[in-house]
Amino acid sequence: MTVPLQPAPDSALVERMMAGDENALTALYDRYSGMIFAMLLRILRDRHAAEEVLQDLFFQLWRGAARFDANRGTLPAWLMVIGRNRAISRLRRLSTQEIVEDVESWPANAVPSSVNIEDETQRSLLMEKLRAALAALPAEQREAVELAYFEGMTQTEIAARTGSPLGTVKSRVRTAMQSLKQRFEEISARSR
Amino acid sequence: MTERHVNPEDFDLYALGALDGEEKQAFEAHVHVCSACAAEMVAAQERVSLIGLAAPPAIPSPAVRESLLRRIRSERADSATPTAAVSSPQTRPRPHPFAWLTPILALATIAFASLAVWLWTRNAEYLRQIDALQSQLASAQTQSRDIARTAADTDKLLGMPGTVRVGLKPMTGMHNGRVGVLYNSDMGMVTCAGWLPAAPPNKSYQLWLVPMKGKPMSLRVFSGEWNEPMAMHVPAGMVAKAFAVTEEPMGGMPSPTGPMVMEGAGE
Image (cartoon, rainbow over all chains, first blue to last red; front, side, top):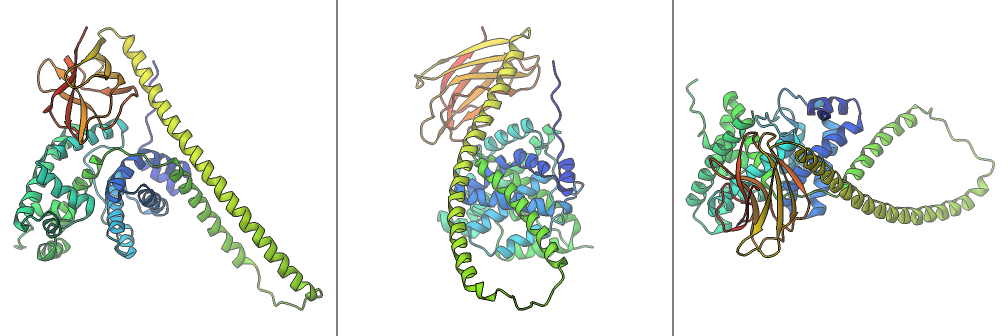
C-alpha cells in the first residue's frame, strides 16, 4: 500500500509564487478555482463574466503575492472575500476604484480561518454542509441572505425587491445569520 | 474606555453587505476606532465568505488557466523589454544616404502590417480552437482521474474484510435509476456507482447512509443526471443499517424530508 503524497500547504505555494514560480500559482489555481468560480457564476450568472473575474483575481494574486502574510489570514478566505467584492462590483457596475482599494489594503483586511479548506476532501464536505445549512433555513430567510450575498443587496434594497416591510427583512436577515453563525461554529468545531 | 461596542449581530450583517444608512455609518465609525470590534469584523468576513461555498458546483473552462499563464508570461516579457530600451544610448539621427527609399519602405511596411494582421487573425482563430480542444481534454482528464481514484478506492475496499455490498432498489417514483454501494465501516469509506436520472424541477436526489444508531448522514446531493462513480469518507466505526436515496428540495437537506425513491440494506 502506498501513502499518498501530502499536497503542499498554501503558505509554501505562496512563498514559491513570490519567487516567481508559475507552477505554484497553477497549483493554487487548481486547488481553489472551482470553489471561487462556482461563487462568481452564482453572482454573475454569466460564464464569460465569471471567468474574467476569476482570471483577474488570480492575476492579482500573482502580482500581490509578496504582500501575503500567512499568519494573518488564509488564502482561500481572502480569495472568497475579494472575489465576491469584485463580482458584486461588476454586477452593480460600480467603479473599478472600489475594487482596487480592497486589494491594495490586503493583508490589512486579511481573513483568518478556523476552518480547514486547503484539503480537498474537507473542502467538499464543508461545501455540502454549507449547502445543507442554507437549505435548512426557512424560504424567506434564505431568500434574504441570498439576495444580500449573491446580489449585493442591502436590507433596504431587499425590502424593495421582495415587497416586505423593512423591519421584517431586518428580522429575517438577523435570524438567518444567527442560525448560520451557530451552524458555522458547529462545523468549525468538528473540523478542528 | 466606556464606549459601547456595536451590536454583535451587526458584524455578520455588515460582512454580508446588508447594513445600510445610519446603521452602516455607525458601525463603520465604531470599528474604525475599536481594535476589538475590528478583529471581530475580520472573523465575521470569513464566516460570511463561506456562504459562497454553498453555490452550485461549477468548473471554469481550462482556457481560463491557459489564458492566465499567457498573461503572466506576457507581463514578464513586457517588464523586460523597457529595460533594454532604456539602457540604449540616445543618438542624434543623421541624414540617411538612401532617403529616397522611404516611400517604398512605407508601402512595404503597410503591406507587411496587413499581412501581420491577417496572420494574427488566423492565429487567434487557431488559438481559440486549441483552447477549446484543451478544454475538452482537461475535462476528460479530470473525469478520468476521478474515475481512476474511485476505482482504486473500490479495489481497496473489495480486498478488505468487513466490506459490505449494497444494491439500492427503486421505490415509488423512481423507475430507471440503479445505485450500488460498497461500504467498509472500519475504513470509513464508501464508494458508489450506477446511474440516476435528473431529479424533477427544483428538486435534488440525496444519498444517505442510515446508521444503526443516530440520524441519517448525507453522502451526496445530485443536482443533475449522475453516472460517474464516486468515493466518499465517513466517520470510521459508523455502522450502516441501510443506504437510501430521497427526493429533496434543490440543494439537499440536512436530514431526509422527502419521499424515499431508492433503498437498500447490506447483503
